Image 1 (cartoon, rainbow, N blue to C red):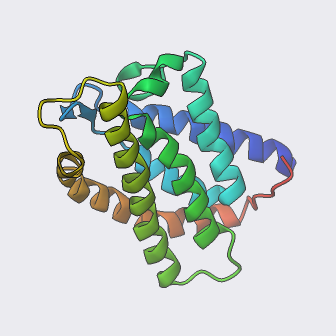
Image 2 (cartoon, rainbow, N blue to C red):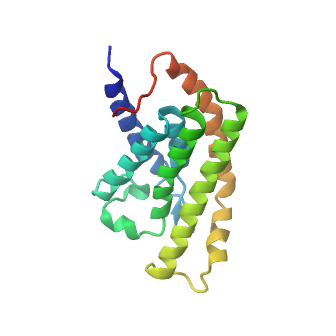
Amino acid sequence: MVNSKTRNIVLCGLFTALMAVGANVSPFLTIGGVPITLQLMFAILAGGILGSRLGTLAMLTYMLVGLVGVPVFAQFKGGPAQLLSPTFGFIISFIFVAYVTGKLIADQKSVTKKNYIGAGFLSVFCNYIIGTNMMYLAFKMWAAAPDGFSYTMAWGWMVVYLPLDIVVTTVSLVVLPKVRTALKRTYTPTIDV
């Protein structure tokens, strides 16, 4: 039987890989320069399955793998130059999404529908607050902002994505209890990585 430390490493690696796949499911479909991805879904699942610490570790690993040059970010991009991308804030937000979801679901002894609803709301909230504010700052400070660019415009761009992110979050939270139940029989995450 495989020990829990090995399972933790494998599952962290699996979610790191799933983030790379989710980032590039539709690499050529962009709206307003931002690619449509399934990363929010995998960040929610990572936190909900692995817990706050291991889910955060998986998302942090994904970010670091991309920053060292492996093309795992959306549109098969990677490298330290991505730190200056207006969309890099969304990659950072996935770390917080996994943490919050893990705290509200996987780290709890008893999970209710309120936990899932709270996790869904806070996941989208973290993703949008961190990602949109960092995008705004990037466009204002170093990226080539479009004419008339404003804070309101940055949030206006995000309205287009909100329905999709709500659907992706809902699907994640419907699937999550089923996956957790199936894994509970064979896997209990531990934090001794």
